[in-house]
Length: 228
Ligand code: TIU
Image (cartoon, rainbow, N blue to C red):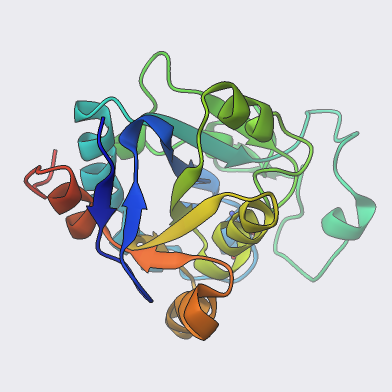
């Protein structure tokens, strides 16, 4: 496959679809639906809905073009042996990680709330990576998967922009990957953090990545940016 050009800021980016992965970060019920982790922290979870349609479009383009799709989920083992006390004890949520909620135990693997929202549900064969931290590289086999596939470019979608998306892009950038935040496919509980978070990535000539969007991705592949 020839090198294609993705419109992005601060500059267009050449990419080879065979060496590119679309990574969808933590589009879980725990973050997007009432009664989950996000709401226990005092957030208005409806703010994250803005990313769902664009993620569906990007997912449709990636699937139609054979681009590797990787889904991630933040959460912990039912015995919580992998949950740092500093994370569990932090702040004053209405229910802490591991406590029972309307979608099961908060941020615990295997519970309804931990699962990916139905609109973006993984297809059979798409890797789903469970991560205990904010970054998708920390204590996971993501880097091994990417190396096995010869991936050099990561198109990063999901929630939230300034937390798990940022951490993953920073981790990926330091490991030598060309990381692109897909602006409309990301969202935050704090619209200002979303905006500034994207600015931070692309400032200084793209200090730790690029910023693009689902329409540019579709256009680069010659696909219609229509909802799937
Ligand atoms: N709370 C918040 O903004 N985010 C997280 O806790 N995790 C992710 O970003 N996935």
